[in-house]
Image (cartoon, rainbow, N blue to C red):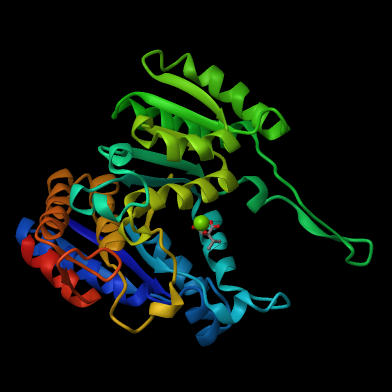
Length: 351
Ligand code: IPM
Ligand code: MG
């Protein structure tokens, strides 16, 4: 198969980790007789530096005309510490999500036996943890009206959801649960928020179409606790934008390193794949970042966007084999500590 992949390395360690995923994808292409065409464009702080905006038109056009997007990271500390900054790298990410209609953010949380000892949780809690967070990505408080009043002394952000937005991402989560252990945990704050009550209304109706899925509702504060207390019991967690942002960082800790975790941002026409770790500016250019999150994101791309299940599985197996042999970057290594590049090469050669 011939596929066009938009490559958006972005900021911080983004270029280093996407490089390794490309290495692995090229190996897959050679082995399974595919042709992957990579075209690179600017995004985030790198794009602001170069052309003055975080999601340039040229980047958008490439995304729209590609079969999938592989994305590194966005964010630069020079903007974080400047509340007056008018343009921020993160705006590039949010605009990209919105313009491309990436409505479902899928974050699989899975523990790996060779890394059990890395987790801050007790081993008996984390054995066999394998769940997926489905986070609504283009609605809620991230995109509602915001502003200042009373000469700047009052600020507001609005959380807003429509029935259609809730239904679209919920259908995705129900369908995903159907292919897994058929358990769906829906997280909200329906004891306080009107948007959460609408989520319950819509998801309860939808549940009638999925009689074999076991649905539970959790308030987000309780969910934050249960994810740590009984992570192995979750299968699919569905939640709104902000809660999903927070819970997915919390959940990433279970696996021992956020550097391991991939994600997919699914849209109706195109989907984007990225590691969840962010730009990690302190590690940029040092060849120490863990490329596994990006490599596993590439595997998700093959599976979700290109229906290449065997190829995706081959990457996952190669990662597992490499970990089992005791190789890892600084954040996870058991026996042999490797750099970003060397880790990517080890995984590619395990293929
Ligand atoms: C994420 C990030 C982003 C978010 C930031 C960088 C805007 O934390 O992808 O989880 O809040 O969605
Ligand atoms: Mg986040």
